Length: 408
Image (cartoon, rainbow, N blue to C red; front, top):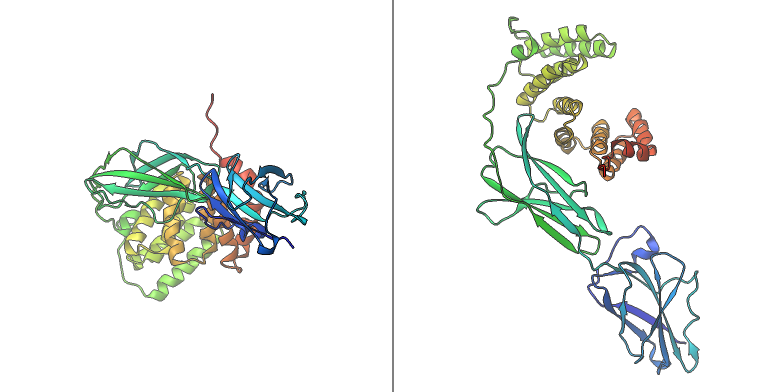
């Protein structure tokens, strides 16, 4: 019996395709022309004809490529275009062919993914701005390729005169075309940004920005007191027991839930006077001010809570809401990322991260966050229901926030 074995020996890497049939059989070639190695069982030699057929991607039509004139492995193959090819060989000897020509129901003997073009990428001019008192460098780029990975973009920077690049952010980014880089206060001088874009075959292209001179950090303002932020400058500060503060917080939360924001604020101000360094009471007061739509004072109050405890979840969440209300989605996202690093099972935070990603036009990231929100805490029933509705209506929501095409 005539048996055939096919193998491509050219920069082979394995790809994880969703189709399980393809996953184990697909190799990747970064060239348009490559060699297909084949082998027949020894007792079937000599061969009288070696015929190659191919199908593109998962279409059912087979095309006859041609024959191997010397009937000896390898057979050279030039792909008509980039993409996924199914290959099938028919070997013939004196007893006949190894099989009939392939039909629409014939499974390929080998799948090959051909991708010989690296991505194209352009780095647009960097822009330095200030947002929420912080220095921000707006990184913008354009990248294109038919076979990009889901998160193809690496961002790195160097500080002159050093030639060493360091990550702007550790994880790869989606091809959103934008990233707002919030600078640390210790980063000074002039920087250059490198954008590296990868495709599924492992091809990559980089682009570097022009050098940008950074402005010096603004000196941090003197810390405010709880009294100055909450409108209680003349009220005395006196010690109180933890039990008193806890009781006031409980009453304030009940009043907020009942819609009595004024009564809630009264109790929260008293709680802050009892414990002027307690992040919990200050963050609750910020939430009350936010409910009253006093966004500026809410922002200051959340800021004070974060000075007492930089990782206090309610203060981070509250400050993020203020940024979202102002349309500062990148800043809001950074704050919520800090929350889920410490509290990865916070379903509401994952949902809010999904909303932010959606409003930034990053549908892939939004889906990831919504799926996390729906699975990290099964007891968060309201969140689970809410994110399921978002996922069901993702196409409509994406269109709502998708950037409009420029006018001709």
